[in-house]
Amino acid sequence: MGKAHRGKPARSEYPGGARGTCPITNRSGVKLMYEHEIDGKKVKISKMGKATLANEQKRKLKKEKQQEQSAGTTE
Image (cartoon, rainbow, N blue to C red; front, side):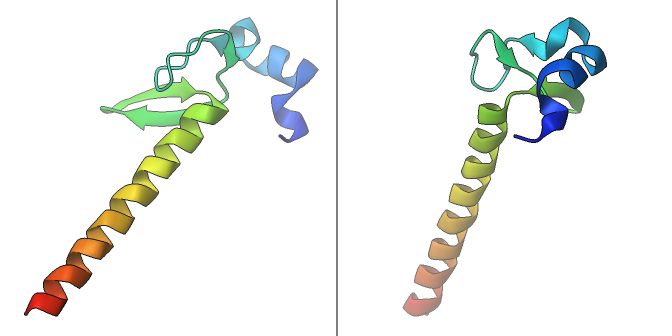
């Protein structure tokens, strides 16, 4: 993690030291550093929450690609 998300810069830049409950993973006491839009609202999420969303997106794209390939072979 870069220095922008550690120690004194994080405490001064984010209210409450940027700690709270992640809306994605529902873990409490984690740093909420990354801004993400959920249902039209911008919320702060944790590093693990960001990774969770990215992995879901990758799985979705992979599944769509497999469905396209299987549909292409049956034609």
